[in-house]
Length: 233
Image (tube, rainbow, N blue to C red; front, side, top):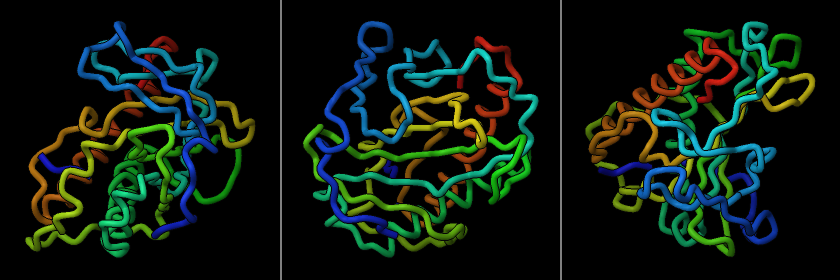
């Protein structure tokens, strides 16, 4: 199965951001990888191995009252990718991926919450980072979503350089209070282990993949917000 992003900054040295590794170890299934602390999340020490059915590493603030939040400020998606991978990809294709995934997730979020662009009471911020890092000393290109545009539902094959990129991606998700900046929930897992996935050969497949992942994430957030304080994403 193939999975998978406008370039925002120049190349960054991973060692300038972080050089630590979070090990899921014996507390999780053996196929779970080591997670390199990319620096995307506010705090990694709070994460702990998830229970069956949860993401690999999770956190939920036990004092968070999700019933008080009715709005989401969805920040642009951020993609951190090893420059050896990004150098083989066309920037327009990467931009299409970034915009399309953001669009699909935002479309689903609107079914549960009001999406806003300004700070205020009752607002929680959602951050999603897609991290393609294999080694702490990887040099990175950082991309970010600049527009929300639906991925074209086309039978045109995707470029060979995009095939299988998702096998190298870790998803980092964070929710925090917009006013206090207190982290409400966070999670880390491999893209391949989150949401439903199928073969990705054409842009129509990408369109479907993003729609499915958006629905999956909305379901996780909805259940997590509705659950008691001991249930994580």
